Image 1 (cartoon, rainbow, N blue to C red):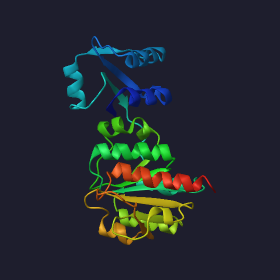
Image 2: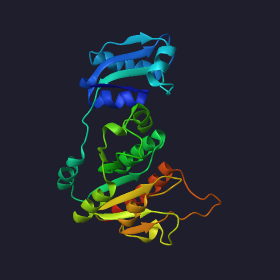
Image 3: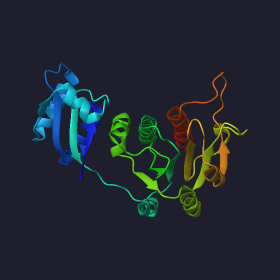
Amino acid sequence: MSEIIYGIHTIKVLLDHEPQRFLEIFIQKNHNNNRLQTLVSQVRTCGLAVQYASRKWLDSQTKGGIHQNIVARVRKGRQYQESDLLLFLSNIKIPFLLILDGITDPHNLGACLRSADAAGVDIVIIPRNRSASLNATVKKVASGAAENVPLIQVTNLARTLQLLKEQNIYIVGTSGKVKENIYQNNLTGPIALVMGSEGRGMNYLTRKYCDKLIRIPMVGIVYSLNISVAAGVCLFEVVRQRSFI
């Protein structure tokens, strides 16, 4: 099976690590972009042919996405299954997981994956329902992170949280309605950080299975942060604390 990806950085990351997955590469006719020209040179060095297409055709393939004048058709990468979770965990010394509950905007999911990759998250977990899927838009926003961080969709998030607890992973949920803030908690051990949607927050059952609920302290007039920004703040507090172990 194949899929469409687009964007200079997204394609470059895949080209650097898995060039064998490329089937077709299209660039816009008469483009004037030095970064794109450098990437085209790399494509040809890998022995791949470049085809030229109109801007209208590229727009149609990406459904109006910001493709930066380049689109590729590639073989699908490994699709991680719910059954892979325990195997992953058995090979990780101090697990660091990000769980996204109800993130339906692909741009937010992509941005969260990018932050997760930067923070060294081992696995990202999302529910199969009530969540954006790993599509071309997510991969473009993630800027290559979607190819590096395992993303596992689960059928029953509450059941997965219980499974993680049985593996001695501390489940930390985020909520703006609790007193304790993220900087008052020890986040250095095996941890799964749970982030809910910006509007609705975590599902009731998800909240029930959390060992601890924390908040990001807010000092301005805004009520909440965008989910990807909030995820970045929380993830890098874990990174900060772990760097002093």
